[in-house]
Image (tube, rainbow, N blue to C red; front, side, top):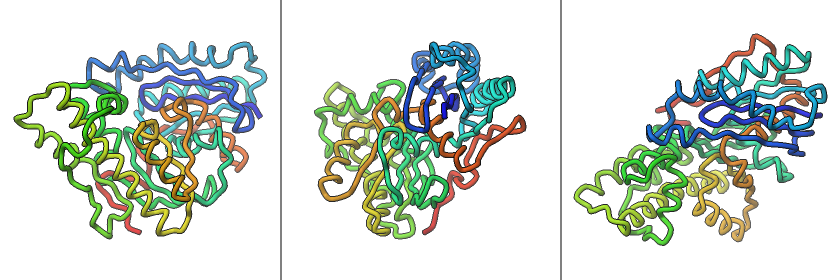
Length: 338
C-alpha cells in the first residue's frame, strides 16, 4: 500500500511516499529555520503563509516520477500543532483525497513521532516510549500502536522549549537544540549547579518540569561575562541537566514496569549527549530504539508510516475531519499521577 504523507504542524513543510509503513520512497522537507531565525522562534502566521507557498512544490518533489494514480491513500497531520499551519496540510490532503477518491488518514502528530523509530526498526511491544520535542515531553507505556497509556508529561515547559529559551539567553540563536548541542562540546557539565527537576517527588516519578531549570540558568548567569568558554560551560551544564531528567524519568518507567525496552523519538532525540547516554543504557541490558537523525524532527515519512498503521486498524477520516491544536489528554500545568 502506497501512502502519501503530508506534514505541516509547525515550521517544516514535508511530503513523503512510504510503502506498507516501512519502505520510504521519498521524504521531501522544506525547513523554515532561516525564515524564523530573526524572530528567535516560530511566528505562527509566518509559518502558515510559507506552508501555503511551498506545499505543492514539496508534494511534487516527493512524488518525483510516481503518478498520483499510484497513491492508495493520503495521511496528514491534523494535530496537535499550529492551527493555521495544520489547516494548509489538511486542506491540501483533503483536496487530493477527494479528487482521487482515495482514503484520507488523519494522523496524530505525537503518535507519528512515536512511529518514527519503527520506520527503520522492527520493534516488539510492549515498550516505554519517550517523546521529547519543542512542544512535548511525554512518557508512554505502549502495548500496541493503538493501546498505550500516558505515564508522565511536563507540567510546564517541554524539553525542546527549554533548549530554545536557554539558547536565546546565551545569545546562540534559534533553533536552540542544535545550537546548545554544538556549544556544549568540550564544556564542563558541572560548571553550574542546577535543580534536579522533581527528581525527589514520588508523585512526579514520571513527570517533567523544565521551566525552573531554564529560570535557574538565567539567574545563575547574572553577573557572568559571556565569553566563549563560559557559554560552553553553561551550555554543557544545562544540557546535562535537561538530558539527565529525560533519562531519569524514562529509567523510572522502565524500572517500575519491568519493560526493558525504550523507544525514544522527537526532535530532542537528535541530541548527541542523549544518544551517548542511550548507548550506555543498551550496555546495561535495556533495548533502546531511536530513529535516524533525519526522522527525529518533523517529517512526512513518519506521518505516512503511522498512517499505514492507522489505516490497517480501520482508522480513517473524511472531509469533515478537523485540525486541533492540543492533545485532549495532555494539558499543560496538569500532572499525570500514576
